[in-house]
Length: 245
Length: 257
Image 1 (cartoon, rainbow over the protein chains, first blue to last red):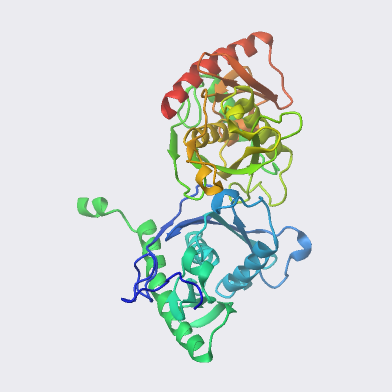
Image 2 (image 1 turned 135 degrees about the horizontal axis):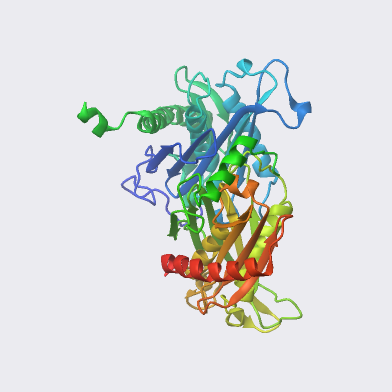
């Protein structure tokens, strides 16, 4: 590398002290917004993300209705103060693309055929961004869907695998992403390991790609456990109540 | 927005309760909901605050950059307020550019801050006519259950109060706290039949005929007002509302110190 910035030191530690295959610290909370049918708050590293679900409800605009199933309309939005240089509020090409691929990933698990003509609206708000927001948003959104009681085949955990300093690193943070050589966000259905979201940019050999996919899928299973745990905490009977009985 | 309707039975219930001086959530007419203020919640913002009035929840963030001043105020920093009523916050909110409600909210909140001189914009001048600090004040509704005016204003005031100008990022010396001269507080009073209530919920807002938003400073002086909705107030009612706004404003000011 021609840059003198070191992303991985001699001991294999990354800039924030993680090992190559470590996720950033993660926290998920389900059911955080009273108005939404389902919601979730997620932090991973310095990312702070809210997801909310409304629906199934009447589909607007009506020409988008599908007589055979519900449509999933996700809106991913970065709040203006979520990044170091203020982002102008409102949609742009990047958020439109991310909204589309997240909608498609969620549609693959929701039993949309149960709600013909309806719309399932998923809103993702990035309140603080530090690389990996689309994966964080999708992870939160699938918890919000479950919180809404949506009939679905499974949750959709998502994470990115990147490459910096010539090494494969799980869940890149902002510094690593800025100086990284490749980024591979993916999402899976954990029960079957089917891949429902995949993007990649940068430069990877076939061998690196195979290895990155393996790391990513394994990490998705780790996230899956945290998603389920968030839902259990939301819906379990409180410990005190159990003691009383 | 406002595709919602309040059922006749609920409307009557709200009216009947108020005639007895009671409200659906157990409050008296002149009682505020529980208010919570968290500041410094967003690391990427120069200042931020998450405010809850009962189930109403808003987030405000302050971002700063260096830009050129307006030609008519060459020695003053620039404040720009925007309000986003995102569809996450309520089934009636739709995505798209800010509509009338969002623009009114942003402008009323902006007036409270601008007219009170809360931010000393002259101290935000770096070089007259050339370089000044631009402050982008962005407010997002996260969950809407009435009274966004007061929640948004309190969130923004709290965010500004704790904001640090990122001077070192722009090679302009050390970071410094935003120059704050006073703490304006906004109180909205709604009229249902002939009763005045503070801090209306969504349902109460739907049932009310008129509202008046009053921003006061710590001297109890009035800094901004906005009457809303198609109903009317008598002059005596307005005077009563201003007194209420001063009294409740003092209560709220204690929360943010």
